[in-house]
Length: 131
Ligand SMILES: [Zn+2]
Image (cartoon, rainbow, N blue to C red; front, side, top):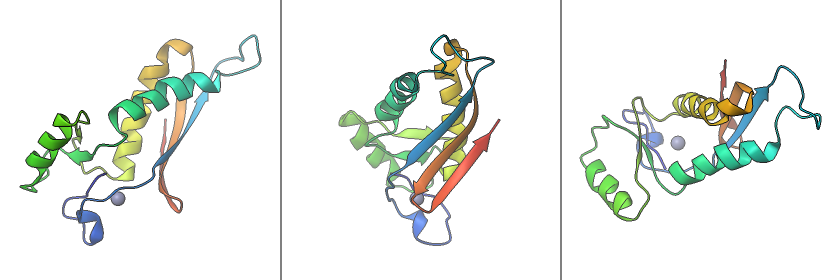
């Protein structure tokens, strides 16, 4: 769930999406099995991180002026799903940049470089980060 403070329309309300992420990684050469990296490694590390930190909680801007946000954050924390705070409004553009940074950190020891990440907020709308 997220909300975009000061949004001109309905996105200023708390709402959810069925986000999907695509990660593009490159390596200087293929491994002995002919891969850049096992897809399972990306799924386990990045997908696992998403499940742990973003799934079934809220991505909210730290300076969101909504007075209800403290209670919402306390409730989610008490339920074991703490809010993930962003410095900027949690738009698809902001979230995809955050995911790109995180994915690169999580995959750093695999030898791959994350060169693009696309985040689908809806089936028709996405934002892409490129290195
Ligand atoms: Zn939204």
